[in-house]
Amino acid sequence: MSDAAIEVRGLVKRFGGTAAVDGIDLTVPAGTVYGVLGPNGAGKTTTVKMLATLLRPDDGEARVFGRDVVREADAVRGLVAMTGQYASVDEDLTGQENLVLLGRLLGYSKKAAAARSELFLETLGLTAAARRQVKNYSGGMRRRLDIAASLLSVPQLLFLDEPTTGLDPRSRNQVWEIIRAIVDQGTTVLLTTQYLDEADQLASRIAVIDEGKVIAEGTKGELKASIGLGSVHVRLRDADRREQAAAILAETLAADIQRDADPVALTARVREQADAGGGPVSEMAAHQTGVALGELARAGIVVDAFSMGQPSLDEVFLALTDRPATTEEDAA
Amino acid sequence: MTAQDTAPSTTELKTPTSADLAQVFTTERPPRPSAWAASTTFGWRALLKIKHVPEQLFDVTLFPIMMTLMFTYLFGGALAGSPTDYLQFFLPGILVVSIVMITMYTGLAVNTDIEKGVFDRFRTLPIWRPAPMVGYLLGDGFRYLIASVVIVTMGLILGYRPAGGVTGVLAGVAVLLLFCFALSWIWTMFGLLLRSEKSVMGVSMMLIMPLSFLSSAYVDPSTMPNWLEAFVNVNPITFAVDSVRALMNGDWPGTDLLWLAILGAGLIAVFGAATMRLYNRK
Image (cartoon, rainbow over all chains, first blue to last red; front, top):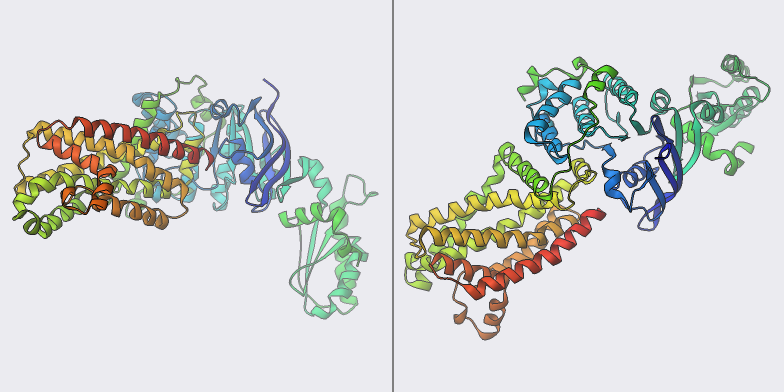
């Protein structure tokens, strides 16, 4: 068995004329959480579906623990489980019936399947809801049942496709706890997410995908270094002054300026300076931001709102996709 | 939703620790279920759905009663002199036609299910691939059995007296259920092929209406114009009606049964294969 849980080379999937996945390469080390970060429609789910043998790739190759997902699909199915974006449980059935059903399909006897379902319901804190139909579950409970259903077979590789989308913050934290506990058992997890902080919290390596392509890949540290330090958002009172404000921000922050769709909004992406060293860069950025606001005030430009923060997914994407091709905007 | 009051909210749910999971993560696994075991498990799922959503039994109870009453009294006097006389000929026919019509709901069930995430889970399991589809058909077999009991009981009340007795009626129903199993692969195919419930319903109706009316169920084909009789005589539903009618009358329809068996095998070979092709590609 190879060390990699997943090896993907040049994977392509087309729907009609458009390529949803357009030549993806990935290597996921066994026993880790690997984050696949991307916006809606980036090709995350399509990629996961191909790896889970739900979709046939149009081109390229994918192996799960050395088994080809097309030619050895059945062997792959014995190793993986998937919790999808939409609950992969039967809403008409109760939680207990869902797990017994899956237990039976895994080959457990009636008795063993019942015992195992009780055990997993208990472990995931669902015993009280075991005999209610899943359609009456809360979002968090549904996701738990979904995860229980995936764990029933003790998979070596677990696909979690946006496991916290639509959950409240509390349930989201609980799902994160559960994911950490799963990885502790040696299970490899491929996690797709739209949230940078989720990938940051859980994954050891992250691939950023956009329009069906991997646009960045590496450890969290490597990725953050390439994204930059954060962004400064400014809303002006007067749209006519935007160009002037952009020039001031560009100069004082040494940042790339992005003109948002909103005619009074500007975003400055603060980059790591070559001479800044490893240390107190963010402090310096904060200081520079103060200076920049002062400069705006001195020029008589009224700022209605201002915020500064960690890069959002949008900004990660702008930082990663803008760089070589669309620099003409910044050069203005 | 009164049940909600008693349930704990998500925030109170216990979150498992690594130690909790280590206890349930047993690595030894049972052998894979056989094709039959996997299929019957899916059949069990269909029965659970009936238990939770009993409204879906309307189409196997009220619909057959309505069909039987309607046509017995509508055609009875004109075609056979009296409804009771007509019923001796007509009951096996309406039994076949009603149940064949109900089979089309299988396509709807497949189509609505496929949209849900649970189907993706089934498709990532290492099980015999056709098992989920066969499971639907097994669950539906139970529904057809209910419908058969309803129609035959209705017939007996209205004055139907089968010459074949209990054995004949049971044999007739058994043949009908096997035929429906084979026929249903057409609907599973459409359920996977078509995009919406409405289109599944539309296409199924287009097929089922002419096939069920232009058969030997309602009237003797020898009374029809030649061109129509020719069509009726090759209609699969006619073979089913003639076989079931003969069995319930206490006769042995050897030739019809042979043709029906060949036809059934053909339906499974063609539409079963098409269904599985679509299922694997979905």
